[in-house]
Length: 269
Ligand SMILES: [Zn+2]
Image (cartoon, rainbow, N blue to C red; front, side, top):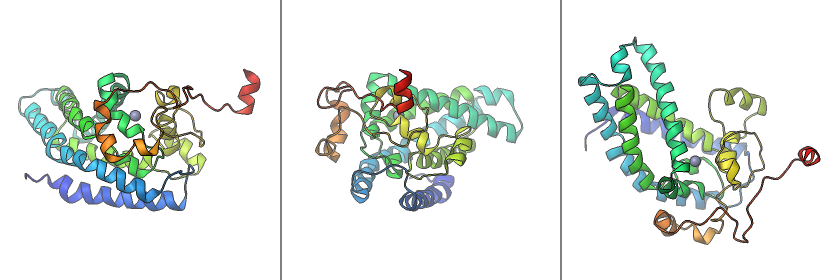
């Protein structure tokens, strides 16, 4: 295996520490009430993520890195044309890649084929730091194409790509965690990054909320409406989920979940 020192010796140990720190913080200062055993979900999400981790390490990183080197050597892509000073190229990398990922996430919700795989991530019935690892490996395989194209269009440097990737993964761990931050602090952080309360809305069983990201409610019901039975979300069934018929966004009793209205909003309606 070809080593990627920045990932193997810096990124992975760093992310493992962030994971453990968040695990402790969400246990000490929980945000949403959890419904299922933390240990059980930890094991399930971890095992589910193993093939995904392999795809990331052997394809989703090496292929875009090779694409970035090729683009640099062939003088292709926005940042390679602009020849900005290092610090400006660093900032531009974060802005451009963040923007690209926003569209990629959007596509994962809007393109039916992609949603089949991203659905696995959203079927988690509780949301915590382990959800950040719960991705079907199929989604990672599609990501290889997305990342390679983005890197070549924007002319992202190979090192910059790795630094962005490590930061992006740390941010993903953070906003999936169930850590209750002081609301004032969270409002400020919300201006620049995605926070746990904000991302909780995105994992709501109310579809309108899943397809958006805004609001700061604590009392969301986490999950995908049609997949709410624990026994239907075992490892084997989760791996097979993208290849099965997809259920419409309805609860098992046929109802379409709606947002719980705040009493003041009820009056206004
Ligand atoms: Zn999503």
